Each structure stands twice: as C-alpha cells, then as structure tokens.
Length: 259
Image (cartoon, rainbow, N blue to C red; front, side):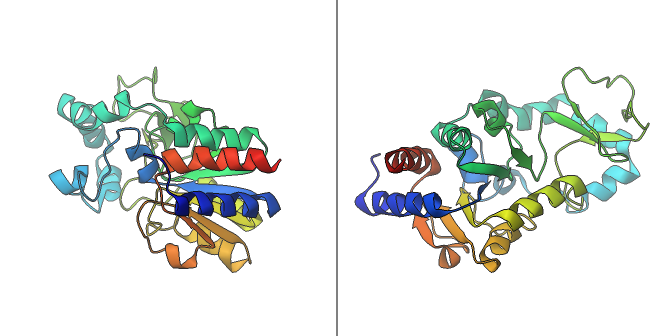
C-alpha cells in the first residue's frame, strides 16, 4: 500500500532531523519481524495469546534443573511449535533499509528486542540483541556465546568449553537478567545518541523501553515508526504512522535526496 501524504511528510521531517543529528541509533521490536511472517508473542495472533504465556519463573526453573530444561528444549513438540515461522522468515524491506542506513554511515548502532537474527541476515553489522539470538548459545558462567549449530549437545546440560559453566540458549527468559555486556553496550549507545529511530515496538518492555527515554532526557530526538499509537508517541519528535517495511525504505530515499 502506498504511503499516504501525512506519512510522506513525516518521513521528510524525519530525514531532515536525522541529517542534523550527530549520532543516530535505532531500537526495533516485534512489529519489524511480524512483517517477515514471524508471529508475535502477545496481541492478536500471538503465540502466547493462543497458548498461554510461559512461566514467569522460567529462569529459576532452569537454574534448578538445567538438564530438564534442555530435554524440553530439544523435544520434537517444542521444536515444531516454535521453529516453523522462524525458519521460514526472511528479512523484509525494513530490515534491509536499516542495514543501508548503517552502510551510509547514518546509523551507528541498532538495538533489537527480536531474537530472529533477521537484522544480521539483512546485513546490519552493529547489532545489539538485548533479548538474545535464537541461533546462539550462551554460558551463564563466563557469558561466552557460541553458534548453536554444531555445538555438542550429546551431554545435557551442555558445558562451556572455555570455563566449564552451564550453557543455555542465548534467548533471555522470564526472570533472567539481561546479560551485563549487552545491557551496558545498549545503554552506552543511548547515552551517545542525539537521535533514535524506534520502529515496530510499543516500547513498554524494560530495560529496552528505557533507551529512548535516555536519549530524550539528554536533549535528543525520538523518531517513531509504527502504524499504531504507542506509549512513546507523545514523547516522539516525529511520528511516522506506517509499517516499518514501507516507511524505512522511504526514509533511506529521503536521506539520499538530502545528500
């Protein structure tokens, strides 16, 4: 669907604001992935809406029984239930537009709440995955990360080859602290930013939701790209009411015209 006049006007305003900015970052959420066919967890059509939310004490349960956790993770029913939409998904124009903004030297860092690896597949280099990556494993002892493919899972729970600690998947569970290295990097990027593009997220899940607020409190600007109103809309300097897959490519073109 073509962008309407109000969205095009907002994109032009956003491009001018970005052009004046010194350090631009982005925060993305589930709405970006939904446009690639990945079901959200909450809301209409959400996996948790349909099947119920996972236990809020999931990380504590993992700590108490990591072997049982891994047996559940590797069960055919679990793999089938959660894997299909991820395996079939491909980056959409919004993902590629963000990668292009980085290649242009405009976007300095991308923080994503998504675990699907699609930003990396699209070519983004400076990606901070605040909720982890489904294709990685992480040692809860030393924090080392490993590609999931090819990692030895013959003994459960698997152990870290570097420190011997217990290894879990990289996806952050309910009750699990955000890994310190990632959280520190995200907060540092927000602290450097005088403009943040917030795309496809309602920005209500903390600590990711705090990042635009850090930028705003430092006198920076927020550009929201979302077809629906969110808690962040009233704080945003520019609001583009359109899906990211349509709005972000148009933003790239608007910036090129300003060059």
